[in-house]
Length: 124
Image 1 (cartoon, one colour):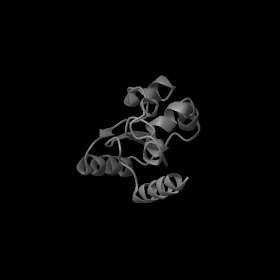
Image 2 (tube, helix red, strand yellow):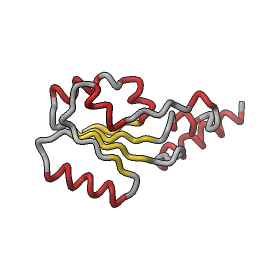
Image 3 (tube, one colour):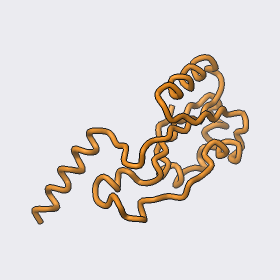
């Protein structure tokens, strides 16, 4: 099971083909928030270089040689629950689940760290 952001995956996407070849039942959760949210939170939330081009994520596994992988796209908790139920019902199948998130969605710990970094930078 892998959780990865869309910005990070654009840097390593070709490895998905290898992953699904070696571990056909792998489950990947793509957290799509249209860019480098970690960098946005830490330093430059409005910098254009934090944005990435939109990819047709559900098409990526097939393009990389894994047409058998299921590619649900979810944007609600209910949709996520349905995708997880499908994963449970098909333990031998691979999944690539695209999870649509708001652009600045980030875990609480990242927000606290970013605030602390901002405070340190303000002292300089």
